[in-house]
Length: 90
Image 1 (cartoon, rainbow, N blue to C red):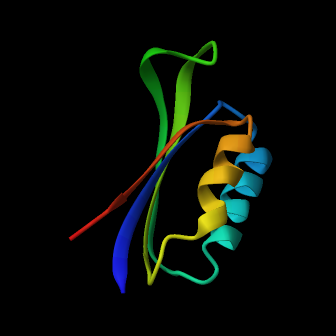
Image 2: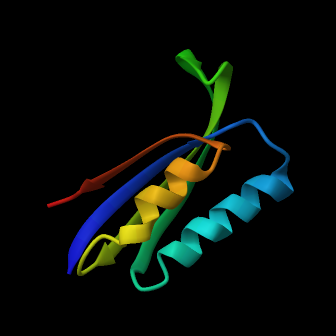
């Protein structure tokens, strides 16, 4: 099993909408074993992303044999996700 870390930056949204997006991400990771989920909160961005100056950060650590193929495409299609980054940990 490989360990991956996913960092999401979401638009400033209502709590219900943010939780809906997080649940969607968790459903994409259903075959993976979710180890950690951290909510870093709202932070000021260094530069504007899609005309936003603040973003809401989430961090997920999960283990999987392979990275879910649909994860990247679904996050890119979601207009409420400003940025995402998936890295493989050692």
